[in-house]
Image 1 (cartoon, helix red, strand yellow):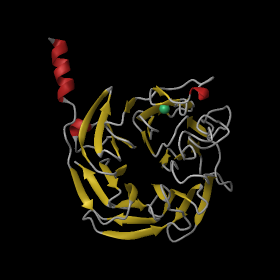
Image 2 (tube, rainbow, N blue to C red):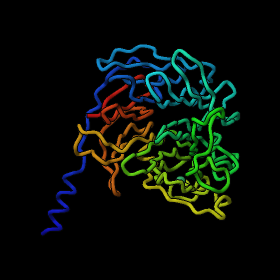
Image 3 (spheres, rainbow, N blue to C red):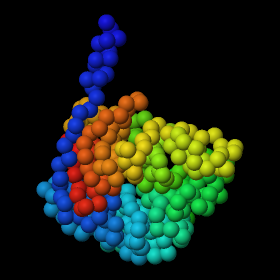
Image 4 (cartoon, helix red, strand yellow):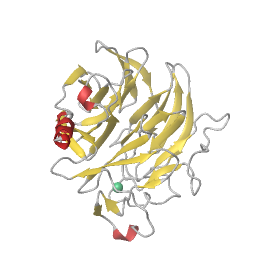
Length: 338
Ligand SMILES: [Ca+2]
């Protein structure tokens, strides 16, 4: 009896469909959204513009990142706000490298770190996130197909990774946090990734959630604590829970994905956020993510996945100043989940 009540309660608490309320559809290939000054939102566009969106949906140019390449998957890929004037951004420079810089509105660009990526326009990673003063950066495996440089497992190569650095370090562009892994290249927090286009850090649990875009068969969500241990997520030995290149498996201690899905459900994962807002009670504590190809948006928690709705060509999720979720789509839409 008690178990049945518990089960019923658990099932009843699953989130139902959510609405995607369009705030504006005037954007040009938006790639990410963050909370802006006051109640505004800041949206990065692929071509380098950062757009300020007011609560009433009106838009204005807030900043322009220059000197980037925009072919294929390249462009201005994400930003992390420091305050009303300063922010970090990740973009591909004119040589194709992933450049992470600190910008000051009305001021200059302070280059923090650059990861070379000259061969292919795809798999640039490109998420930046600021958490407890440290900067987290995702990088792709170098592009092409099948990890051609065998970069993802290589701890001497910064591609196919998530890095953590301290970006405020006196005269140096950055330094290595004392809490980072002790062995090898200490900047590397996670490896064995293919194209971790979007990741997020859930403050209350101290977990990082990574959406890693798959090769031919499987999209995946990975998860790790950000306590300074380094995790290997398997690429390109594994694609999801399936062996991909058996020549690249030796000596690895791989952490399996939290969830995977195949081509019947999508073809390019867009990682999201654990919902910590107040407005959608049933969604609290669920990880929300989507798929760029199928347009499905799902929520995941404790082994369960439910579909929330449809958002075609979703490029990113974001969180506003109240903790509510947003999404951007490549057709120019910024929408609020509610
Ligand atoms: Ca993996």
